[in-house]
Picture 1 (tube, rainbow, N blue to C red):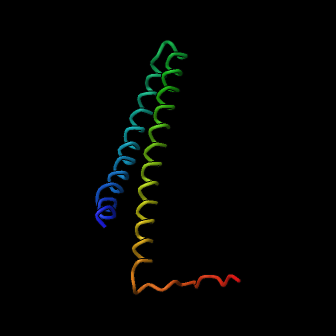
Picture 2: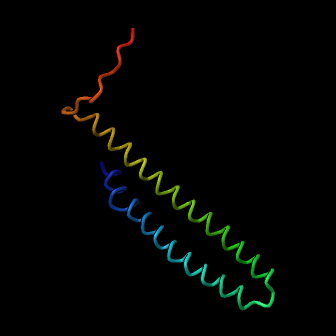
Length: 99
């Protein structure tokens, strides 16, 4: 139960905040890359720098999404276990009859 509480109160909200912060930071990086490309005398170098930022940003966002998704799945798993352990819970669909 403590694990569920930690997921609901800390991990999942923290993951959502991290994704929102990442969104804000990505906007800043995009603005920087655009301005850098426009002002740069060496367009190829500016393009390569933009590619590097893009790769790093995508990896970071993928990691944040993966972490948040795993936390949500863990939360759902705990909730399902609690639901089925409850004595007042009867399955909606009875177990299939197997001969």
